Length: 491
Image 1 (cartoon, rainbow, N blue to C red):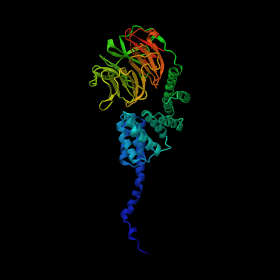
Image 2: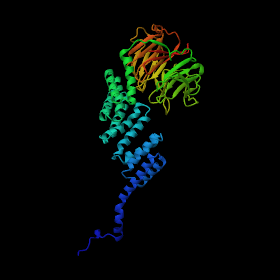
Image 3: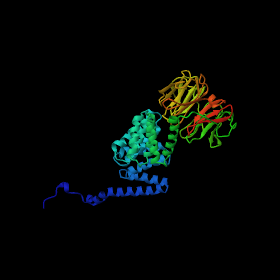
Image 4: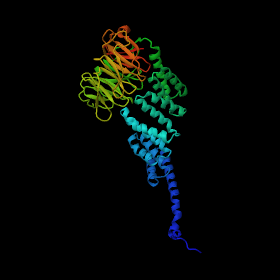
């Protein structure tokens, strides 16, 4: 019998442990599955602490198992959805991207990472990293369910950068890709808005109608119904403004020198009463105080999430705080606006610039004509009134003029000053104007600066001292009459 090759002679001890070694991967897989199932059970029962500890043990005991990417994604979602700590989700998403980029869960992980990066953006230029993640989803996982959401998010990123045409393509792809999925209704609504921005009002209205028919119970359908009504009224029908009288109907001499108005995201009217040094919310016919007392208030803005911000002599006072934040050397505040990025734009009557206060970081200034009033636009920028130049300037999110409208353009006579500005979610802008041959009155502009409706207060039979205005959810205009202590509605 020939001798065995030295390479084939294995120690007896090694032969004994080979079955054990061969079983180790299977045992690890079994342990990982049991830990995952145990954590899943605890999580379903809302035993979050037990679930998180179990999944952490899984990542330590079987870091390369097929359950590891599932755990990383679920831990990240827990931080975002339950703990409300998106920054705590990033380490899990980073590990999922770096160690398990080929795993199916990586598509959802990249998508979530991109969404969180987009939320952190404070300017359009900050969206680059988020867009890279959305593109990775499309490139690496072209058939994944996450692709529809990635296209929707890419469309929004292009929209925020002023690229409505490119945004529209992604929105259309998003709802065509998964017409029955959860992204279809949001994508159709965004596509309709993009068509409006591009000047295709008929296409916009057709798509809004399609959205209402396809997803009638969705929040997007409710917004589509409101948007349709406002667009038809303001852009197509353009009925002459008429005075509906005191609003709410029948209430006169019921306020204490109202001077400022703003619309809350839910449609309630917010007003500041000067004699009471306080802001109030009008819901139906009930008037409720909002936030602390704020003597010396010069401007009032509403955050997209709902809280009220007041700009006073002492600085910025938020609804949930009793301490004013200083606003530097701004001593003659003439208006303010809060954009979709959370940046506060402040105009000073003595300064040929706008001062921007972001949620985080230092303030900065943008050179522009001295502004007598300003309002935020749904496109992300603001509109300002420059009385010295007698022009309305529609500014993009970076403060660059997108549209310039001379005072008096397309009107029977020119006016000299703008007292207040207001805008609605569909892009209409209302201006409270005075002076010149036009006199005191209101002008409603479209997103492109075209005059939609206008009237003088003399023609409307209004003789009070109007200091502010707001566009309501039905396309009406609420006026603030300081002299007569009431609100007036134009329809």
